[in-house]
Length: 249
Image (tube, rainbow, N blue to C red; front, side):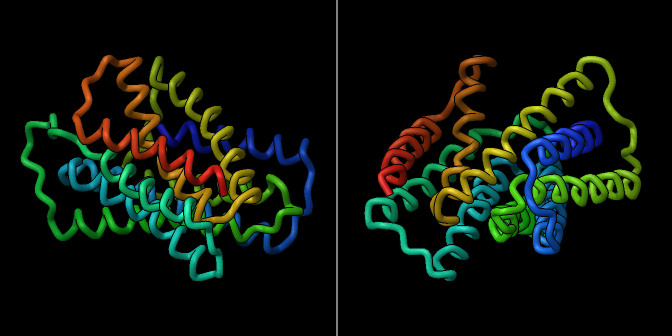
């Protein structure tokens, strides 16, 4: 899927960057390229961890790292959210973990949380979290150009990994159309991510973006008619409260 969606999103982000304008400086290129590398490795390691380990452990652990790393970096860099926003961050972290929990692993194969799975899980969580941190360092006057360079390096890494693992066959038919749709949504999400980071503190914007599992669970309920666990409901409520508290910052 990413063999299709990543290069398509790269082209779309490039076109948007040209239209919007901005300064293509060395910091914009460097921070963008580094962001793309971390993003690509995060995707690779996350899927590898999900395929080899228990989803009920891999998903929430990855989610807490994705949210926790940029929050920690923001605090180290001197960000000081207000008391209400600080409590909202804690609630958001709790919500991320609860929403990301899976009741059971539907795959009949036994999935153990081995040392390799643990490394993949931690690596993917840190890589995804680092994605927020790195793109936040890009100069504002570059506008959307860092996103374009990020997708360039991510695309290169994805194709290199696909070639290394023998997975260069792209999807066809309906899966191909889904991948194209994912590219469009991914492009919009990346632009929204950058604008959110530029308009707010890293520690606040990143933890809100890390609540994406709540949207996934909600769509699963509405579109796929899936049933959710009690803990996931609690997590979604915590997420809503957290958003309200952080928004008053």
